[in-house]
Length: 215
Ligand SMILES: *[C@@H]1O[C@H](CO)[C@@H](O)[C@H](O)[C@H]1NC(C)=O
Ligand SMILES: *[C@@H]1O[C@H](CO)[C@@H](O)[C@H](O)[C@H]1NC(C)=O
Image 1 (tube, rainbow, N blue to C red):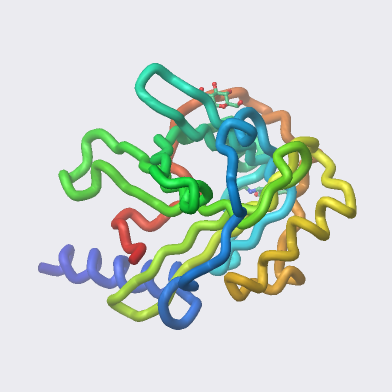
Image 2: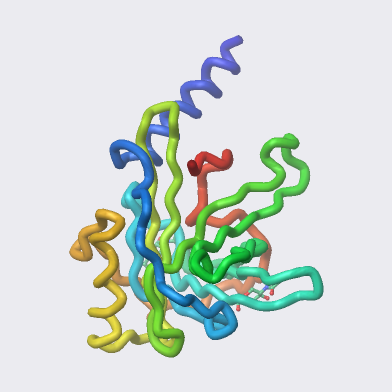
């Protein structure tokens, strides 16, 4: 009983810490028009990010799309505490209509979990990109339990340094999801060689809430 209560307290406090923005996720958000997934492949560096819970749980994050025989996968890699190189692999769900092309979802598969937690699906929405320099992507999760949401924004760059013009274009769509570009955090890409190299699969840090809560 005590154990159950402490689990419950942990659950409730993590919900409150994670979901901090009032109400539902932004609706009817205008995304990149005529998004071309084929041009979005290969590596992207996370050069700025915004996490509505203000936690920074990854450094030197690189996102990479690649094709496997059974579909298209997103590999999100990072350096943990300057020590470990880790990555998470999610499968992309490709929208069937051209109008919805930028409305991607990514599903992470967790073995050895209760059945309802094995597959966790999160939105991965492309707000803007010019494919060669910058991309602005966001995810959002809503908790009906406390009527609050969580937003994470990636400002991605093909090169480790994003030029000023591209940065302006990348941050332009942020008001559509109610994010103030002043709150973006610049990623430090100067210490991206981990001390101990451990190329290991791990839980994604940008999609942390285990239950699919997006509506
Ligand atoms: C994911 O990306 C990282 C960094 O590029 C790489 O080291 C790792 O091997 C990749 N994992 C898979 C399964 O492709
Ligand atoms: C990210 O890097 C900073 C500075 O190098 C370090 O203090 C912090 O612990 C790192 N965070 C993670 C989650 O690796």
